[in-house]
Image (cartoon, rainbow over all chains, first blue to last red; front, side, top):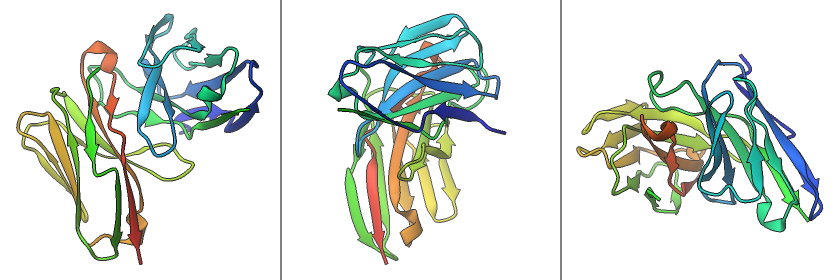
Length: 115
Length: 112
C-alpha cells in the first residue's frame, strides 16, 4: 500500500511565487491534516479536513489555503510565498474518531525553501 | 492552545546508557502517541497508550501513560546508536476533529 503520498519532495520558490503541495492517501481515511515542521521542532497544524468538502484552520493557517474535493486528495496551496514559509511540510491522515487509536499516518514530507 | 511540553529537548549519551524522555500537559487526552522521526522522513508510530496508568514495552523501550492521562514517559534501556533520532509525543482526542497536539520533540544522539 502506498499510504500517504506527497509531492514534490523538494522545491525552491522565490518570494511572491505560489505553489501547491499535493497529498493523496489510499486508505479511505476521512481525516486529513497538514503540518509544518521547523528544524529540530515539533509539528504545527496548518489546516485539517474531516471529510470531502469540509476544511478548517489549524494553529498556523496564515498564508495557506486548502481544498478537499475528494476523500483521497488534500492539496495545500501557498499564495505569495514568504521566507517564513521555509519549512518541511507533512501531510497526515487518520481513519476518523470512531476508528483507530489516534495514530496519524504521515507522508514523507515536502521540503520547501523560499528565497 | 493546549500544549505538550517535552523534555529534555536534546540528549546525547553513550551506547549502553539508559534514558528517559518526558511529555507533560495540563490537558487530558483520549490517547497519546510516541513517534520516532529520522532525518528526511515523516514520523513513524512507536506506540499508542490509551488507558491511564498503562505501561507498554517495545523491546528496550518502555512507555508509560500517567494515571490522569495528561503525561507520559519513554524510557530506553541500554541505548544503541540505532536509537538516534527525534522522538515526538502527541496527544490525540476523539473530539474536535481528532486533532493531535505535538510536543517539540527530543533529539537523541547515541554515541558508539
